[in-house]
Each structure stands twice: as C-alpha cells, then as structure tokens.
Image (cartoon, rainbow, N blue to C red; front, top):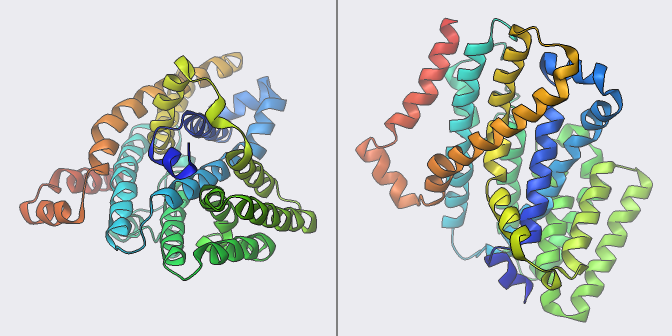
Amino acid sequence: MAHSAVAAARFWPLDGLKAVAALLILLHHGALYGPLAQALTEVTPAPAAWLQDFGRFAVHVFLVIGGYLAAGSLRPESRSPLIRRYLRLTLPFMAAVALTLVAHVLTLRWLPELAPTDLDLGQLLAHALLLHGILDQESLTVGAWYVAIDFQLYVMLWWLMARRRPLIWIAGLALASALVFNRWSDWDNWAPYFFAAYGLGALAQRLPQLGFRGHAAFALVTLGVAAAWVIEPRGRLALALATSVALMWMPWQSLPAGSMAAVSGYLGQRAYALFLTHFPVLLLVNAGFELAGSPTAWAPMTLTLAAGLSYGTAHSFFRWIEQPAGRWTPEALVRALSSWKLLPVLSLVVGAQSLFDLV
C-alpha cells in the first residue's frame, strides 16, 4: 500500500505510537506535579527520575506523526484546511482549559502551588488564538504550548507545499531546524524550533512516492540531522530521527493486524483527548491523595488509578467534544456564531474563569 493511501486509512502501528506517546506524557506529568509525584520519587526513585527527565521527549513522536499525517492530507490550493485545523485543535483545547480551571478551583485548597498565579479574559483570548507562548502568557494547562506549535507547524507546512519543488523546501528547513533553530532555546515558541521533527515526518510520507530517488534523498536528510545531533546531542532530536526512520523504512504493512489493530486504533484515536484531559484528572487524584493522607507506598497504585480515570475521561471527551469539533467547517462556525450555538462553550470557559477568580 502506498504511503499516501496509508495516511488516509487507519494505520494501526501509527495509532500505537500515538497511544504510547500519550501514555508517556501522562506518566511524565504524574511524576512531575503534586504530592503524588513527591511520593513516587520516594518509592520508585529511578523510574520517577526517568519519567521526569525523558517522558517529555514523547511529544516529539507526536510531532513526527503530525508531519507525516499532515503531508498526506494537505492540499495547498485551498485555505480552508488552515481554518479546519484551527477549529479541530482549538475547540477541544479550550474545552480542556475550562476543565482544568474547574479542577483548579476544586483542588486549590490542597494544591495552591499548581494553580495559575493570575487569570483574566486577555489570557483566555491568547489561549484561544494560540498566541499564549508568543505573548509570554502563563499556560493555563500543561501541554498548551504543543497545541500552539502544532498549528504553527501545520501552517508552515501548508505554505511550503505551495512552493515550487516543495520537498526541497521541507528538507532544507528541517535541516536548518536541526542544525540552527533547535539549538536556540529562545525560539521554543516558534515553529522553526520544532520543524526538524515535523519535517522528517512529512518527508517520510512524501519521499517514498519518488522511488529510489526519494529513499536516497531521505537518507541524505537523516544523515544531516544525525550530524546535527553529533554537533549537539539532543535526546528529542534522536527520538524524532528514529521515529521518522521507522515510518519510512519499517515494513509496517506486512505486520499482522488482528486485535492489536483494534486496540491501537481505539487508543490512537483518543491520544489527543488523553493529552488534553489527563491533567485535570491528575489534579483531582493528587488532591484526593493529599486529603486522604495516603501512605507513600500507595503512590504507584494511585498513579495507575489516575491513568485509568484519564482514559475514561478521554473516551467521553473524544465522543462529546473532539469528534464533533472535527466536523466543524468555516461555514458552520459562521452559522454557529450568528445563531449563538457556541454560547454554551463560551459560557463554560468564561464561567470557569469567573469561578476561579471568586475562589
């Protein structure tokens, strides 16, 4: 099966990678925030330290897969993909922000250090426009930076694919990112900082269509990125490189499907929902852990409980929030705004902000 066709269908190894990455990010935050994280550090110091230091790298698996899928579906001749992408990212994201603010209100007594220091409508607007990082606004939930960067990368890829000989542009910018931009920490609110991972995913999707020349070109790009890693070793870059190589050259289509495909498909489809909603669940579980005075030894079991509750929340969020948001079009948005259909969503976000101010 051609790679472009694979991107359109359910590709279960890809879903599996997304599911594992989302779980690692959940565990990373579980080992990083609140009294539960402190207890985990005491009970299981080595695994907790690994999750704290390296769990965040799983985001770069998302970036590679994001570039892979975007390159398979983008059509640069139309502007509507940009608006659709914005709606698919932002509507669930702002709903998750509202859930997180409500969780902060409920847990403020026990977890004041995790709550935002300040909150106003301008901050909410910056998040809704995905400008919170650029405007140096405090993030209202973990992972907020990723949502903004994902949209920037999508816009950048759309623009590059509209150029003449787009694959050369994508390869060039991916190399520039690995060699230059990704080494400038001040650029971590801008797409070029992350384009090495995203661009590698896009190239892994498009270059196989060129046959031997495409495979040779991808090999040259990966050698360039590997050279960038030699110049300055970065775990995130190594993981992005390994993920893109796996997407390009592993014989995924020959792997048997069966029940593994069904499980991977289910979890992979809900990976973004899990990414968005696990933090409010962690807040509530942390507060319960603190309130109950739970023994430190219960920390691993409590984190397992938090993961299970997060998957349940992600299931409902995917069904009632993310899936409907994915069907929105620019025309539907205009109709909704003119008929006040978005009023409940806006009320939820603003109401959560008002409730937070009252506490």
